[in-house]
Amino acid sequence: MRKTRATTLAATAMAAALALAGCAKDSGTSGSSSNNNAAAGSCVTAQAPAASAASTSSSAAGAKVDASALRVGLAFDIGGRGDASFNDAAAAGVDKAKNELGVKDVRESTASPTEDEAAKQQRLSQLATDGYNPIVAVGFAYAGAVQAVAPKFPNTKFAIVDDDSVNAPNVTPLVFSEEQGSFLVGVAAVYKSKNCHVGFVGGVNTPLIQKFEAGFIAGAKAASNKVQITSDYLTPAGDNTGFQDPAKGNIKAAAEFSGGADVVYQAAGASGKGVFQAASAAKGLAIGVDSDQYNQATVAEYKDVIMTSMLKRVDVAVFDYIQALAGNTLSSLPKRFDLAVDGVGYSTSGGKVDDIKPQLDGYKQAIISGTIKVPTTPQK
Image (tube, rainbow, N blue to C red; front, top):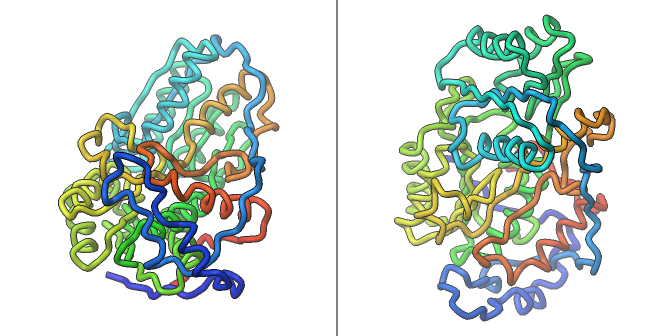
């Protein structure tokens, strides 16, 4: 288990701690539980950037088009549809394309936790052979398969989520600024922590998941110079079972809660359900990832402990990709889905962060403007 004592993100962040504590106290919303109190005075030491009246973010989506001629192949990462996280977000983007753009033919196929590279290549090849175009590969684990298969089907369009290493004319990367959204929920964690101790549970220790950890740590440190942060991973790089092991997620999160953390952020795919279980048992709070997990049916029994979710809008990216392909405007897609195009963000379902929304939006705008630079590797 790794522990870090936070330091300030910037010298100016310390200027008005007492003023901030007054602003960040619970708003007194009726019906809120004790877990819904901001309690900022106990941990927050930094003044949040001021939020302007107008939002500085904008949608990347263009005019709706007719995509009924497209036959969409959707190659899921492990967990598939129903993981209440990453894959479900991709599925939601395709479902929206069916409802709004007229897509009629969709085939889904899901990776298994222990399958080899040949199985991934076979999945993509079979979809292409059967005439599916475009094919959306959900997850960086498909990078090698896309690299091998795409050149064999030059008339088939491929998109790959979370990887931009494949340089081919028929491949479009759909990548995100996960660290930016994670920064915001790191700030939120500090505002809601009563123990001034927060935690992070990652599924697999890869550079991608480290971006979630990096942003979370940076956000927590931006809000407080005394917060304690505990980080854990379920499996090392190369062992992708960390994304589909709720029992292991429960064990790691339970250890963080018993060690004093009272808010834990998970970036662990289907294993995140175990983190929610641990939060419920410990009477703590948890932060979801990718989708608005407060509204996910598969984790509905734990919704009361989900204070917010870091929204990684895979649904937006997949929908926008299908729309752009149908409209022959692929060049209009952003190079990276970040806060400026609402590619990442945070959820407000359940009302647990409503009272600190001005502070969160102030940090959001500071990131968009470039005033705050969020690291992509954890700064211990």
